[in-house]
Length: 139
Image (cartoon, rainbow, N blue to C red):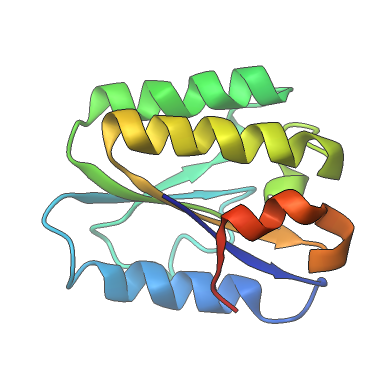
């Protein structure tokens, strides 16, 4: 399942996402992964959450590589129940035009391997198109 936090920059999506990740530890039996652009949030997240900082992986430069990167994370830990991706448009040169395909591929990964994906997008709902209605908007 893919769930989204959508809104303009500075609307509180990251804080909401950090709070959701921290509270998810009480609800899951498996692992939680938080993918962020940089190391800034490392100390805001509980120690049991695996934090992945994309600036450490500059070789991931497009949507195909990003999907492969996520599959690599999942292949190393079959107990991952939730993957949080903060500010996806700041990662790997992903643009608003890439998001429909990206979300569809994440939905397929979720269906095959189990983790739920919670993704924040710094854009207004209207900018994303009608496909966004397929996904739960959390804010």
